[in-house]
Amino acid sequence: QVQLVESGGGLVQSGGSQRLSCEASGGIFSINAMGWYRQAPGKDRELVAHARSGASPKYADSVKGRFTISRDNAKNTVYLQMNSLKPEDTAVYYCNAEIVVSGLTYNYWGQGTQVSVSS
Image (cartoon, rainbow, N blue to C red):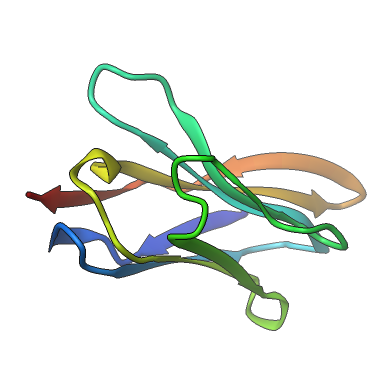
């Protein structure tokens, strides 16, 4: 069974930095894309950053210039480096991956990790 396990997150002061990690494991043939989404209380889940193999990373306008997504394909891991954090970045951050398993492509989600930015 494929699993996405996230780490990082927690409480940080405004202007600070954090790095999130997400490792995929279990029966993976290949990973087409990995990304990060977030959901703040009372709001819909939104895309933060997305990295598809062979394509340039995509970012939400609200995080451009502050967040950087990167992948370590050898480790099936995606990272989100978050700098200059703002209180409005407070949310549960979810890892997402498009993974090929036994010839079929599936979409998987991590369990979510809380990021809280204090003013």
